[in-house]
Length: 122
Image (cartoon, rainbow, N blue to C red; front, side, top):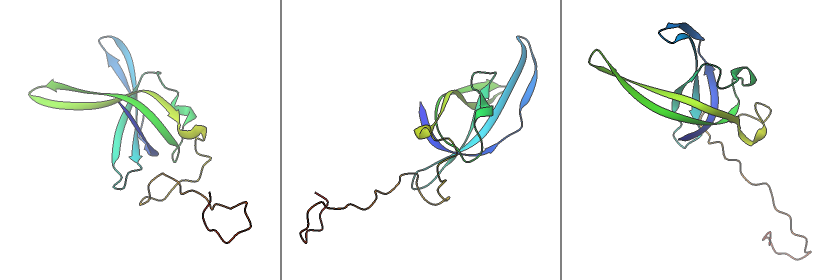
């Protein structure tokens, strides 16, 4: 699955020792650019993605898997990223839209090359 949005927060890196050795997990909060923005907590396990190359405010495309598991009669769901790329190759250099706007930009003004009174751009 894929999701696009703006990184709004990084959570603390978690690490520990398991039966397969040492593990490390970095979680971040992504806000979608829909008409009704949603916040999603996404985890990156191990060193699959270089999280040091991203910062708060970056627009990104994230490929992820959703997995649920049962433990002591309760179910837990993880959203695990396996690929993350800056959207439009811009990282945080592009202006970041406000919380209530979507991430689509409006087209600029059109100028007609003809000298007539026609308002149409074509």
